[in-house]
Image (cartoon, rainbow, N blue to C red; front, side, top):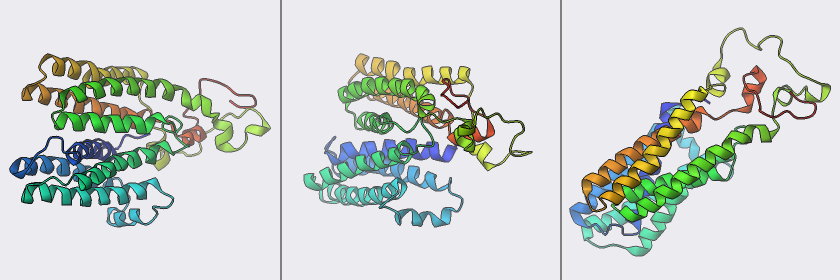
Length: 301
């Protein structure tokens, strides 16, 4: 699928911000006064800027408020509702830490839970799409949560937690790619299922459905070269896993080291999120004969 910059920024920045708010909600680090103000300013700026970026991908951003109306059936609406509640609860929690110099543990735990819930809802927007087999797997929300928690741990200065989370994130990301590469073939989708002509026999496209390009071809049939995909995967694993872990273990108590590890993590985060969208194969592309499953099924091509 087409990797829109607004959606990449939305999923990356909001996840990073809510991950930081999760640790702050647990009182990690126990910041008060001006220290708390600086910490919450960074966390809220990341979270809110990510949510705002998501509106730029809408056809009519002025109607973004309608995202709250379908919370019973839509993960997008649930994400909007849960994120609003999380920000309100954490706003009250931050006000107590900044203005009154006290940490309200119960309120913080509720806010931290809602922050993780927001990241989970964001991931489920994609994980529930059966039309994109690569996303439609249990590992999708796990990867989103690990990215959020790892970035949050680095921002919160929790070095050894960040090291452990980084190792788990790297393994999960590699497993997500391994499983995702097989999801399209395992789904059974093909040009026969896309056109509804599969039961008749072998289906071949003689001419394209349109003489020119259209929105669906632009959004649903984007394809990244295998060479570029492998290179970006290697960059992701290095910047998310090996390099940050090496830096954090070599200099666990230094702010400079933590900042360098965080910068590398963000590079890997954006590379991973770009691949998340660029490598996603929408079954709609079968209708235009733009996809080739690696396996063939009886009566289908």
